[in-house]
Length: 343
Image (cartoon, rainbow, N blue to C red; front, side, top):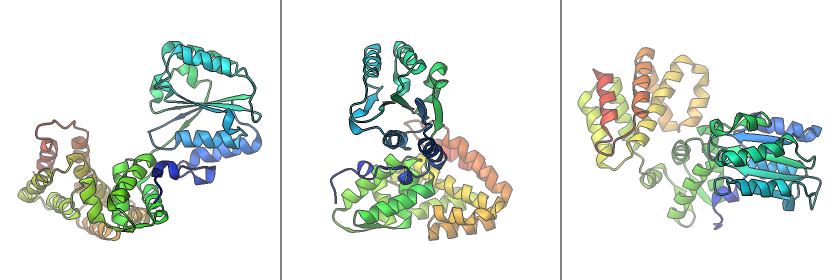
C-alpha cells in the first residue's frame, strides 16, 4: 500500500473526479468552455468538501501552468505585508502560460488592513490574473470582497456519496470493507471527504497487509457502539421501556463510547424511519445509506411506530444533540431526553 496519505493520493485532478459538488462543477466547466472565466471567485463551505481541489482544477482548466499557480494560506500569512507582496507579484506576466492564479485559503483570517489591500487589487485586477479565495467562515469575509467575486457555496458531502467513495478506495488499496464499515466512516466524517479518507487511512494502516475489514472491527477502532446497543435503545424508546433504555446509555458510557456518536447513530435511524413513513419513494436512497441489516431494522421500526411518535422522538433528540456535554456526566442530556420520550 502506498505511503502517500489517501486524501492526497485520491485528490480529484479534473472536474469529472469531483464528487458531491455537481452544482458548482457544471457552472465552472461551462465558464471554461465558453471562455468566460471570472477574475475572482470565492469558494465557501465546510472543511474537507473540495474547495482547494476545485480551485486547483479550475486553474489548470483555465490554462494556468504549474509555475504560475500560487497558493497562500491566510491562516499563517494574514498581514498587510503578505498582501502587498501579492499586489506587487500580480503585475508581472505569467512565466509558463497566459494566466496566473492566486489561491488564498482561509481568506477570512486576513487582517482588516490586508483585506483593504486585497480589495484594491480585486477592483482593478490585471487581465492575466485570477483570484480564487476559499473560506470555511463566509460570514467573516467583508461584503466589499464578496461583492467583487463570483460566489460558490460548497455543501457537505452526503453519507451515500462518501460511503461509495470509501468502498472504491479500499478496493484500489487492496482491501475489502463491508457496507457497515463504509457507512460508519461516512457518518463519522460529517460530510468531509478529507476526514473520511483520513479515517479510512487509519483503519487500513491498523489492519496491516491486505484483507477484509468488518463493521465490528471498525466499530472497535472508532469507539462506535455495537449495532445491537443502538437498536436496543431505539426499541426502548419506541416501546417505552424505561429501564432498558437507561441501561443502554449506561453500557455506552462504561464502554467509553462518545455519547454524541451514540446519539448520531440513533438519530440517523429515527430520521430514516420517519422518511419511510412520509416519503416511501425515498426507500432506495435510505437503503443505500444504511446496510442491508440496518435497513431491515429501520423498515421494521417505521412500520411499527406512528408518524407522530417518530417526529416527537426526533425533535427531542435533536435538542439533546445540540446540548453541550459537560465533562462530568456527559450522558445526562441523553438520559433526560429519553425520559421525556418515554414518559
